[in-house]
Image (cartoon, rainbow, N blue to C red; front, side):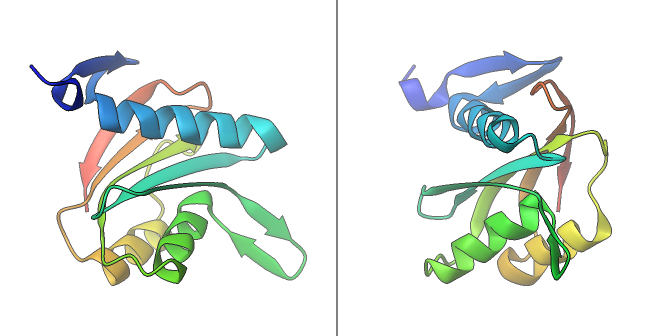
Length: 124
C-alpha cells in the first residue's frame, strides 16, 4: 500500500492521509487566531489552501469561502476535497454554493468540531 492510500481515523470517521492532512491544516489555522471556523481544501492539482473565518465590519466570509476564493485566485481548476471545522455541525448554504459554483459536483466535504473530530462527510 502506498503512503497516499493510507487510512487515518479522525473522530469516528476513516479518512485518507490526504484528507487527514486537510483536518490538520484546518485545525491549526482555526486555533492560530481562535476563529469560529477553520477550513482547508485540496484542489484538483493537489495544492492545499487553509483559512479561518473572516469577521470584519465590512466583510464576513466563512473559512470555506476564503479557501475557495484562494483557490480561484491561484488559478485552480477545481476542488477534490474540503474540511470545515467549527461548531456549526452542517454545511452552510453559502458554503455549498461557493463549492458548487467553482468546482461543480462531486466534491467531498468533511465536517467536524473545533478539535478536528470529523462527524459527517457529505458530497456536494
